Amino acid sequence: MSQTLDLAGRITSPLQMKTAAEIMDAGVPAVSPDADARNAVELLAKTDKGAIPVVDDERHVVGIVSESDLVLSAEEADLHLPHYLNIMGGVVFVGSMKGFEERLEKAFATKVSELMTADPVVVHDYASAETVARTIAEKHHNHLPVVDAEGRLAGLVTRADALAALVG
Image: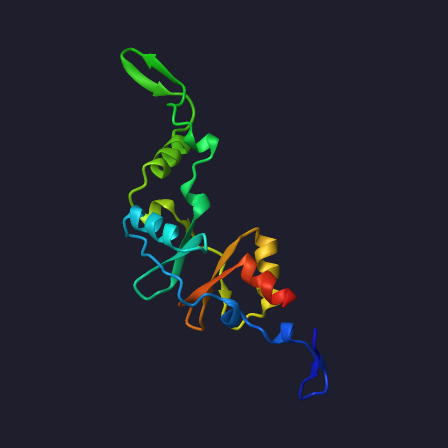
């Protein structure tokens, strides 16, 4: 790796100069939370990124939909009714219905807001490639939306983008 001197005479490398803005995909499509869930699925099928940001009307990132959000785990796919008792002609559920309701909602999602992971981890466009890579590793994510100074979507950076910046 080549090294240069900065204005203060410190040794720098190209790695230190790359930012999220330089390694992100600025042309990534985005969807709104109110969009039809099928739109998100179709966009995911057309892109090779594996995720698409969800933005509000002002392009602030409010969520992300990844391929893993579309796959129900074995536990989520189990849509059997919770245990219940039939007492005097009425049904009384034993335990909470909340988990069942959440699995049911995801299985039959019709809006992006029902599929997405809300409040995703984001990085700013000025963040270094090293910071992006560290955030991806620490948070166990494969994709991070990149936002500008106003918090609006600027692009999407992937684990592969960050790794390529670290080695190249």
